Length: 217
Image 1 (tube, rainbow, N blue to C red):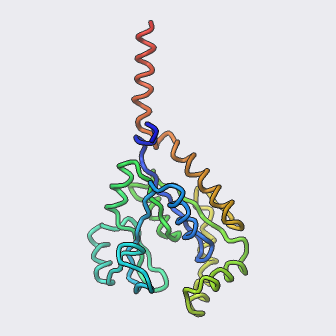
Image 2: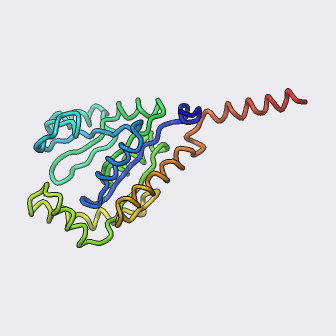
Image 3: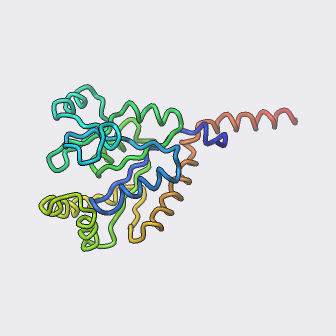
């Protein structure tokens, strides 16, 4: 690992989109591309799906447990989505970015807004993923086979409101080709890691350079 990589601050990489636009698939691809990335495991009050494990896909909590986490200030963001609570515990995120590790968030616009407005917002990189068309969005929701027809209908109904928040994000990508969208994401992250405010060690580098100038005079 290069020196600037080891000493930089971590990024909070926010990926948002309407359900079915591809953010979860892209998040998984990013984790494969760079194993140093941490995935923010959300807490939720929804029941586990077949094959899901507590602490891997989600932290599964009762509504009372979740609400207590909110009351204790333990959630970086949270939202009610289709009758279930979802949110990101703050402690593991704070630990990761202080160690220079980026954290990926697969969350909706409400969660992204809360993170951007939080004390950690200055480290946030927000990216919104748009579908190429509404018929394609519906096709993808049906093809993944995870939800009943009424749930798919609810997701499609909500997608218009979700898409309306696209101007709030730093970057917006149209996911009409998964490989191309992945390549754009990698380029964005690589550039954002080099932002001046993400590299506090540069102050010491410049001081050293100035001292070397002084030594030559």
